[in-house]
Amino acid sequence: MRKVAENITSPSSLQRWENGQGEMSVEKVGKLLNKLHIQSDELIDNSNILDIYTATIEKAVKDNDEKSLKKIAKKLINYYYRNPESEQLFFKAAIACNFYMDFTNECLLENDDLVRLKLYFSKIEVWNQEDILLFANTELLLPALSIYINARKIYSALVEEKENFYYKYLAMNALISAVFCLIEKQDFENARFIFKQIKTIDLSDKYLNEITRINYLNTLFKYLETDDLTKMNEFLTGLRNIGLESKAKEFELGFSKFIKLRKK
Picture 1 (spheres, rainbow, N blue to C red):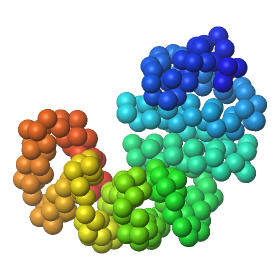
Picture 2: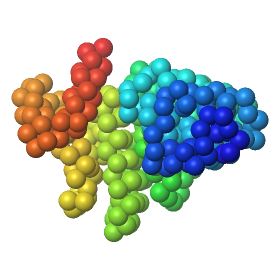
Picture 3: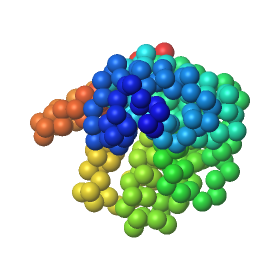
């Protein structure tokens, strides 16, 4: 890390930024990424270096910065193609491509890469937390049937692990995201099936964010049944009335995207 940070920032500042405990200017982030571009493949494959990309992907997503996200995704794809045996590089590239596809509906990965991702999930027999998190961050790249099958497996695993708070948190978010992805791919029947399974899971107030997302999905399905915007407008207004303006904007943006896709 000292070698990467040299002449750009201090190693301690870089470490704090990676851990989400400090800020770094866009200019410095750009310099770090440019410097990484000329490092050896061995250095690029280092997990600490890849953490820089993870943090940068998160920032680009948060800022709705499609241009930066595409640049990051293409760099990671290039590193992966030079090191095709590295699962870590492959997954990082897939995650960046997943978020870019969510913004633009454009897939940057080749068909062989998509098949590799699909096969990886199909071979999982015991869903651990890492695999659930990976699925949640790449599922838009998968075909609808694959999303549906894996979501059912995660639900079955969740039933067995429902007393484990973090496992339940990850699994619920992966399942909720699966419903969103299935809706986006216009597989409404399987989206409804997974949503019905989600609603069988008891959630305490600790899962407020997940409960809010479930309520949004419930309102979205009502809209699909009636084409009436009244319930959706009431739901979004209700969020704003209780101080959840950012969440209302997030759902409003997602709903607007859904309407555009449905008109195509």
